[in-house]
Image 1 (cartoon, rainbow, N blue to C red):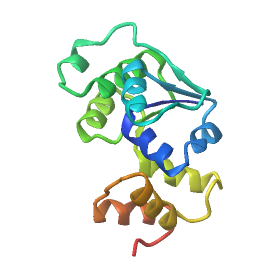
Image 2 (cartoon, rainbow, N blue to C red):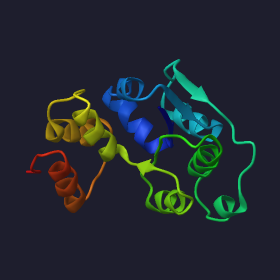
Image 3 (cartoon, one colour):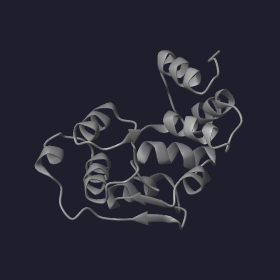
Length: 155
């Protein structure tokens, strides 16, 4: 399975020390060069198993969406590689990716997948950890929905 990641979900995983989830859940973890540059502004190094792939072209529909460089390149690479998942949190980027038929999830969706694959036993403590260490903010309604999807209750 292949995942392409945008910057913010991967940053949160790196800050929380949970980046190994990607390696456990996917055979191949890909980021575009713009995401690599954004990540290296905040992190001295990236895991060696992250593969950097540049898009050969950026479709006009993606370029004209006025997303940031990381989101633009992540969607463009996803359109070329047709991954099993595009990991992206930004709402406009997610909407554009979905309009292009790409399978998307965000950081919280990844947490639910980690629970379903038995990488973690509980969602709530991990989400709290991501909020604290990963500098993440999530709306209360979204947290309630995600915890319900994982068979838990947000408190």
